[in-house]
Length: 569
Ligand code: GLC
Image (cartoon, rainbow, N blue to C red; front, side, top):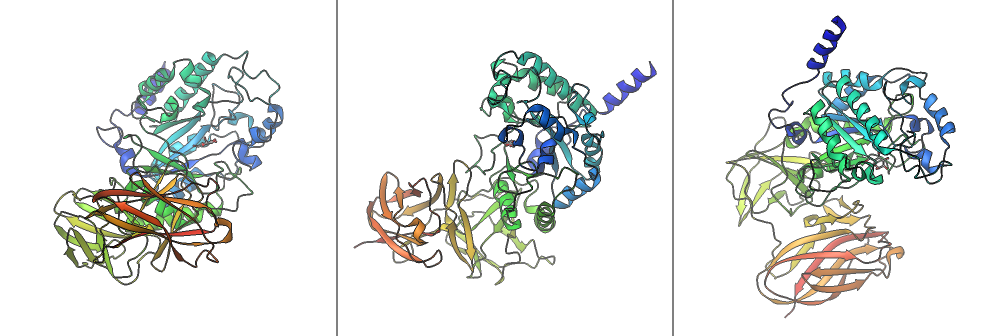
């Protein structure tokens, strides 16, 4: 009886009634902006991607040896969470069970769990104790697809067992719910359940997705649930969307979202052969981009099987943390940019009467243009300046020009903070012609609209901004321009090209008008040329200009500076 009362009391304690961020259960997530994703399990022992069992068609019995060799003797939950706190992250999501079906905790519902490892401990328990001490909320990734559970179907097509018959997914879902109960009752106030592996339609076919959502909510109403419970389809109870390996162009179907991204090329689990890592600059800018679009960044690491985290990850996370220590005010708790386009290479975020300009290419002119800002400015300063030395500004038509020092305080991203008379109100930014009627559409003032993973990257060499790595036809540089009066324009493209991109086609679209060009070799990727693509009759008014590459191979060795429209007599 006493034990029962004790159990009852602890489970009541574990069950907070008030969401951590106040009345809105989503508020903490909206404010957090930055989380760490962790993929860790028996596949880390192989060190060749978390899909290794499938890629190498490893029979279950053989794979079990890796599970039995999972012995993270150097794992220290305090060290991990202290690193994540130093990185500036506000939450952590770790794989409780990946597709291989192995639970990296002590699960009574499963005998394919930490108990069969020499380690025997429960890393998730340790993390649930350490995370709150380091101001982190903890959530669990949980794969619906399960390559191990006997009832789960389909099996892998290459397995000796019958791929689709003989299973019982209803039984499997009951098992899954039991595991969710364990996770939601034994590991503190679980921030979220992050489902994956939904593409085999397990829950949708059985019409049990809502049941699982409601089950989690009953166990802990604070726990958020991602869209993969529902096969990423809109119009359901999911709390947020999960664009994977890309940052959506502008928002995500109007819903809350979180981009999950690997620091390395594409391995979520530890990959001992990986040599390619995103730079700290790219990661900082990605966090800024995600925040300026109203989302969160869930940045992935795959720890080693012994429980250590490779230095390639540690140094990058620490660099992000250093940057956030100075500039975090412009990230945490902010909302999406009020601007749809910027004239400079950079982005914006806002919080109440504060507008933050994150500058990636520092203006050579010494003045930063803020387009169409209607507010009164109370003050301006650089977040990197501890003295908060006021910056001067002046009006230039509808724009504001802020005087900035000659050199960037931080080449990765420098933040200018403006204090306004209220929430920023802006007129949409449209590029206007200069006094000769010429439109200069530099890549810095474009938005790269992307449908899938964005590969194209704006680069900055001494204030000269160009697009590199433009290898996908669905990365589309887009500008807004305002033509004061109808006229005929010569369309020119500025670029540098090596032999490998020679003869490939790119098209300039303005409304339903198109003109095309074939790329000529300029020698190398930094010898620029201006090429005339054709002439277009453009009506007066607001236009959207897009440049698309039609060659699906993309344009290797190609640097794109932008488009010029020259009025013809
Ligand atoms: C992909 C991978 C999976 C990984 C997930 C994270 O779905 O296949 O292994 O866990 O991305 O979003």
